[in-house]
Image (tube, rainbow, N blue to C red; front, side):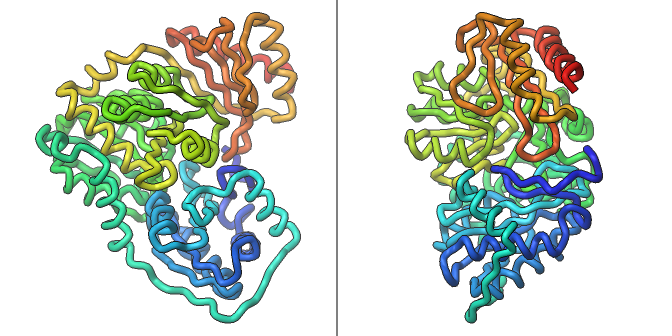
Length: 456
């Protein structure tokens, strides 16, 4: 990823290179714009991940918000889902979270949260962006900055999770796991949760200092150290957590990565086995998630990529569970967004209640191969690339939900499929293909990449 990348503003927030495209001035200006968007004298939760640049950016944001008359509840280094939960618990009007989530160490960013603990949607985000571009600001008396102890927030979050999972089954299973929070905020909450669940836990890279031991996105290439920890400790499985603790990926007892989508598939299986209802996920998520839901008689709704799309659809449909195929699991009765700790708990529940190993459970799911790539390409070329794909696959069904385009190549809602879209979080185009075997999924991505190369 380019170290000279521009500031990216999207449905997933604001991201840039700290000290380059993301500066104190940019943070202050966005905080001021957010304050103008919020009601007068709003209460705002302020949190950050553990990146070294985050502490100063949080101070800058706090000052800008307090100058605008806001009461700032500063929880410090804190998982994103915990901060969202505290918006709801405190009755605050919003939250500003300093994080670049899975992006590499030089990056940082801002996630803006509304009064229901959910990300701003596209229309709301565009309103804040417009205020930012207009350099909107307001000064009001009465603003303040108050520390909110993380220990209090953590206790509330853990208790909420424990109330919605089968704690007894997990404790009785006497499981052993390895966990890699990659020096992020997962190291702040997972020790308490796993201790409460009676799970023997072997942490690596636990110190929440933001000095990432490896690239932080929890994809297979970055899970080698965790795989070794699982083998060395003879753990049942391993959990890899991204820096702001809203995504979790798994490795099996052999230390092999099992794919980001498996987290959500197992979580859906765990919930729908005991509670029927709609399931919501995104166009880019594996067919295995939809299959897990439908196996238990639950309808599935697909949305564009972006957490807010999933959460708003979950609320609209009264969904029992939702999430994204990047390891993001959502139970809205716990907190209104992706939550790595929730994903960890539900995967443990699935294993404990089944009496099977992770490998044995995964073997019961339909077997697909999903290939995910990100390529440097002009997003303006996507319509032409999609037209070429339609010419090559004239029987393809194009999913009516718009987010780039998703093509089911056989004309039926099943594999193989291709999803081609511009990233919300990086200056790249994402290519995702799923098929019955790895060679076919790779070949499909190769074909799309060749098309984009020809068009560039």
